[in-house]
Length: 124
Image (cartoon, rainbow, N blue to C red; front, side, top):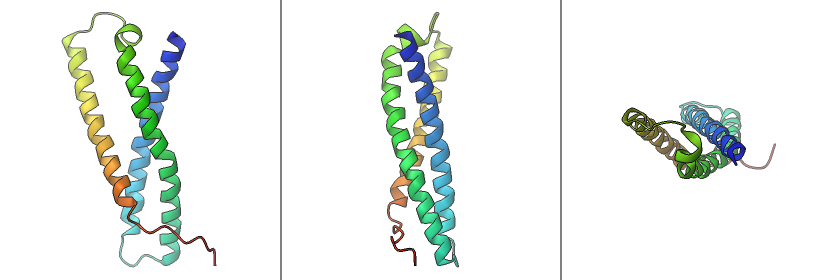
């Protein structure tokens, strides 16, 4: 069981990193896509890249939330060995508030991107 909990911890951390980096990249793509004077071909490439990025980041968010739930349920038994001090609780609370804000920002970026037209399927 301990090995599965350890695997879940790594999966949670990796998926969180994918979500954060993917949201930053999506934000950068969105800024470029909305720039004045952008060529149609460039807009098409950006829209395709953003779609691919969303294909990666949305499952990463789901994995982050699900594996985070497992971590929360198993924290006291498997994750933290030793006495849980006030400083540990405060640091975990601060970390999770910061990451909740980052996740919220990423959700906002993804929500706003959905309003950008999808590229046409034709290649001509």
